[in-house]
Image: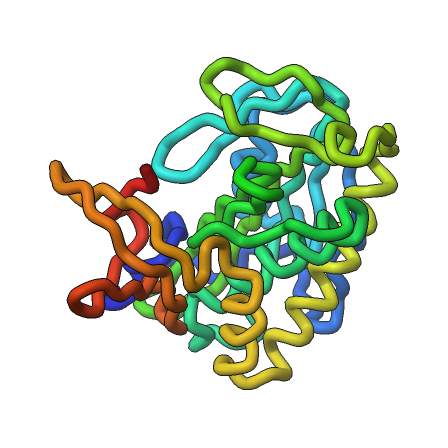
Length: 269
């Protein structure tokens, strides 16, 4: 597993590699598109269906009400019932040798595409895969992956995007939604289906494009690129200039020297 743990992914090891009911590499993301009125976690639900072998690659699960959403690094993702996109997609990898961060980058770009279309500017991807509008968090991504040995077989892509919510928990002081930005109320199901279409386009593009071009597109949207930021590593707080992210998912910055960070090593101050 060397090299995989630098990425914002969660890994599960399996012995049985035939988890999907049947597999079609040409199946688009979003078909079928299943709406759940209430669920603990769309990622957990999708993973359970995956292990039961009763889900097709590309199946989307949209929760109207999610009671225990999952965020990065063991955090929870809180969303008011019926007001936001809480979506998970079960996916079989067409190329098991794909670098894990490329899927993370492609997913973040799909979310960027959707949010920027309606917010019309000031949207960025905060490394590794949060969606930001100005300096406020609009969405997040959690990808849970399944390996057999060193072979990457399946992924469950979890996406949370703030849409119609206008009141947020004090634990999320910098949150923002599309409604707050635009003044408009959106149909959650319609918007989630559009996100699935954009994700399908980005994933197909990911398979057909050189990794360098994927990373170029990601870096073009990178939050604070070329700016001096304050980061915390352990007990040390320092200033550094954000440069880029490499194909392994490491954040690269420069001050008196070049610095490289894996996911989970630093905090933004």
